Length: 87
Image (cartoon, rainbow, N blue to C red; front, side, top):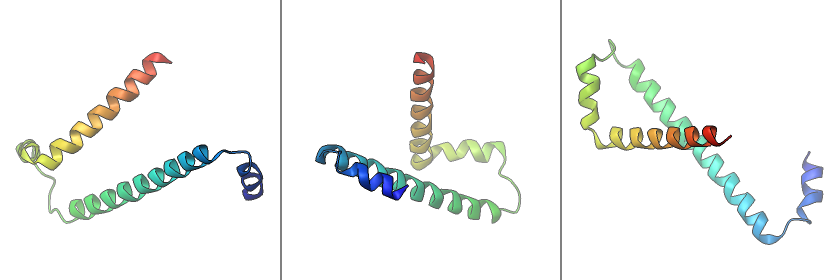
């Protein structure tokens, strides 16, 4: 596999190579960030004695970080839905 990639690199121009490298770096950063977030959330959840109640969950919407992440996920779902409609 590595041999195949290295043979084809000479056919890729500099701009395409830089773009591919940037995409690979962004994917790795996303995986690292996502993995850290999941590990931290898991540790916080395991530390709870009992699950939070409905009102506790609703009050967490006052946290700007929670609202920011919800906005991110809603935006991502909107884009995925739009792409599914166009397929």
